[in-house]
Image 1 (cartoon, one colour):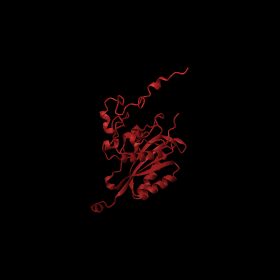
Image 2: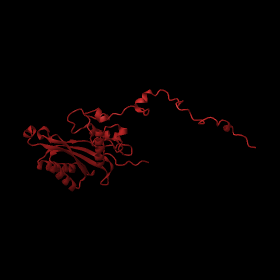
Image 3: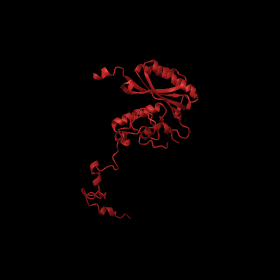
Length: 112
Length: 156
């Protein structure tokens, strides 16, 4: 025996289960902090460490400084992640390539 | 214009880092250094300082060797001098790799004193490929400022 689907009785409503426009968009709490950044992103603003300290120069011989701009695999970290300004990112990228030529920094670090 | 009249004999400032094969004795390394120094003095340059970083582990094999002796030369001269040094380094069997870089333009040779050569110990511990803390503490051309990178807080 076939019985009436209970959903059929509720189908008179417009739009089914869709929320009404302007209705509840979920409880996101207080978003005032993110308003300036399009409601996205959290964390602090990154600063170019070579701009922060004018005394420090980009130096291809300084392995300990350059390793902060290289991944574990040996790839150059983009400036959107490292926080470098464009000028210093160019200098850092060049210094890394020069250090690689002298085997101070690896071209590629194989893992596993 | 006034600069030109006062600075009659201005040179460029260069540095060259070259890698020497690790099985060489100190005497043989010194011979290579003296030959480079001789070229600079012969060709109208001014040699400032040699810094021997010592035997270090390279990040990849260079000339089929896992280590190399790094030597850093700091000098003043013209562009022809650099190409002459590089031509000679290419001919030295002991030298496996080199790189030159310009540090400054229009440098007065009188303003740069000749410094004593420095010899550093290099990587003593094989498990420390990024070592060279001693070299990190030392800056050959920082202009005398404090200038240390904030992260060179290794012991030593």
